[in-house]
Amino acid sequence: MHKQYLPYKRQFTRPPKAILNARLDNIAIVPASMLPFEQSLKEILNKLPEGGVFLCHAKQNSRQTEILERVGELFQERGHKVTSVAMEQVIRITQL
Image (tube, rainbow, N blue to C red; front, side, top):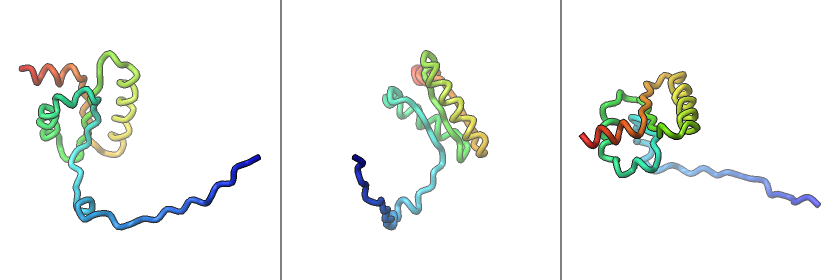
């Protein structure tokens, strides 16, 4: 016996003005474990060129590194300047 599904209808509403006026300067993809270093990350992100992409990964997590390398390639293909840094490097910078 098959379940019968109702047709899906999507209704769009107007987004808030704040979202319409928002301008995304940079994109950052970092692990949640980097949240305690938010201030240091902001300093690094502010130095990126407009439209830059910052990718942060753990050295010991090779799967994460591979995925972020592919994500970086996709952003580069679309004309973004990509900066990829290991978490350990960001932590080392903050300790100086």
